[in-house]
Image: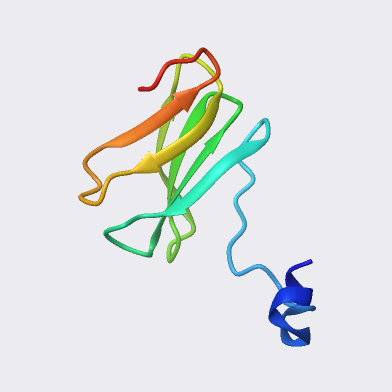
Length: 90
């Protein structure tokens, strides 16, 4: 449990932002390397989503041809790499 690792101060905290767009399991989330105000989320529903945290808005939604297992964003945020269930990387 997270509270076991971080201490009791984190036991009863509310989520600051909650996104519930995914239709299947979310497999990877990461912050933008350019701005900690953007969040990338990949899921088994074949979708990569980009969120703006301050506005709590979905900025971009991209469909992949296969469920996304892993995802990474390059340091310039120009490219996103998706490792998918069909054994391809996009």
